[in-house]
Image 1 (cartoon, helix red, strand yellow):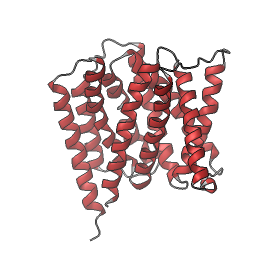
Image 2: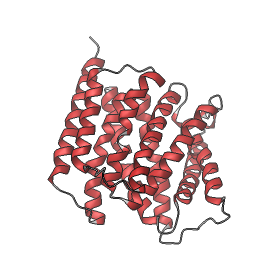
Image 3: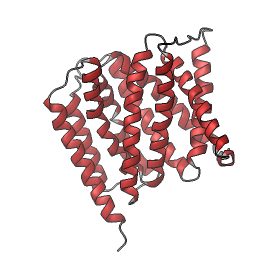
Image 4: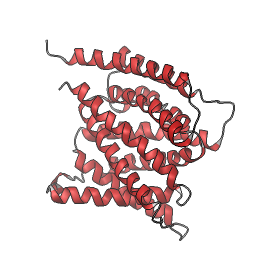
Length: 289
């Protein structure tokens, strides 16, 4: 399979997993704060990753040569994810994703500097089309700035940094190493932040399945995202993630009764068009002559 198409399939797994995580995060928000959610998510992640590494005898793939880069990546992700979990509990899911999706703009602007990737006209055009589609779908009201809007917008910057540092790590390390340090480092961060006041809430039997789902969905999302970034440039992978917005808008309508109208589908059409053009051009460019 062509690498760009393969990356698009990996991103579809990431999109589904992030959407599940948003719903689960809202369901447990009445019992747990964002630091506790992140801590329990990392507990599940550590158990799953360590079990898989043991079963597959892959501990040798876990490297320590780039711990500094891992630490920067996980600090950026931990910060962005906490802001994101807070935002999904206080504003509509479609609006959270719309503001979060300003991160591709940061990636496109910064990846030539941080990753040395070439910014082509087609990649920039795909990202711009995706962003226009997002504005059509969510039409965030910038006159009503709320803490939820601010945190969702801020999370985009940290997610952009996470994307670029992940891509940088994939040049020298495998997915097993990246996922291990993701869960291990963020477990320590979660324990420190959740326990600084000496009170860590324990989820009850109703919330526990949602917490487990957050852990598994978060891990699967990063597994899919890391695979996509390992085989295609960040400026190709990131615009594909725009499809997550119409997906979560429909989920918000069905599960929480959040308003949805025809503009969601108009915006989705623009998003799909930008991604189709980007993938089509990249696929033709990567074919051997």
